View 1 (cartoon, rainbow, N blue to C red):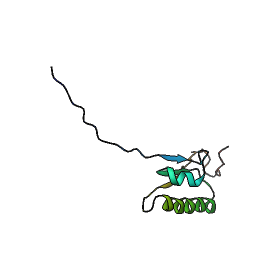
View 2: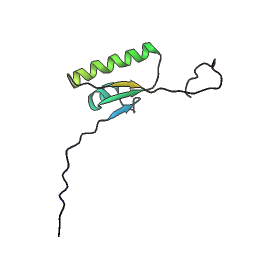
View 3: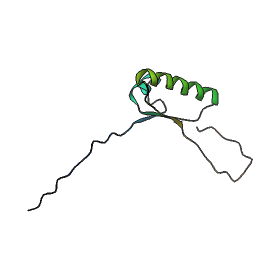
View 4: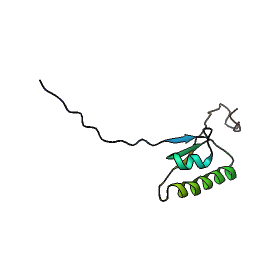
Length: 87
């Protein structure tokens, strides 16, 4: 009888919160490995990004935790149509 030994490596999977996920920004910075936000006006997105980076540095100094946003694309037949907020 032949036995095969399964060799596994420890694998760490990262977690990224989407939106606020019913959590505070501090909890996200402390417990997540990254943050995915929805599109917002630039000043608001900049403020969230800066606050997230500051809190991430407090809770995990020197660890890169990405901040990104989703991109909503609607290919309208009308090339002059304006963006419409997601309901």
